[in-house]
Image (cartoon, rainbow, N blue to C red; front, side):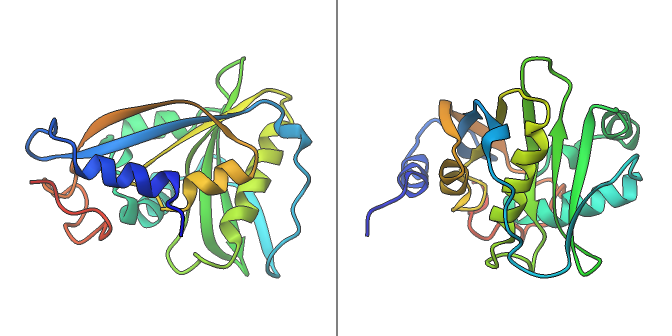
Length: 207
């Protein structure tokens, strides 16, 4: 079987020798879609799906989404934000927190950033545990693209080797192209208790 770009990069990151103690080797891809408004509205892969904006979400609800969806992928940045800083961000009228529900239960979410006049951006796209492997990720991504396309501007996002192993290929299949990529180092948030040590089983703890 041919290795994917993710798998090749994962192996290369494991062999890097420039990683300081307590940090993880990460490779990040930056992707872009020039005309998101051309993507057709997807057929739902299951019944009783709805995508709803959480307008002015409470800190507790946002942290539930972010922590639950992102823990396995070692999302630590927003966990380190104070409630005041985070609330100022998510309450902006140009930040849209979009939640996918199935039969009334949150199944995934993404954050759409409309603050720039040159493009839109998808941030923190993920399904919640228990909802993977059923086509919901592809469906939610297509809905996100269509939602952003209403602005008639290019759409960008990024992913990295800490994310789900199929994320990069999923974005590529939907029409995103890589316009930049780079190696990074990331302080392992499991070492200081920001995220439980057992999270991110696909990523060994930093030395």
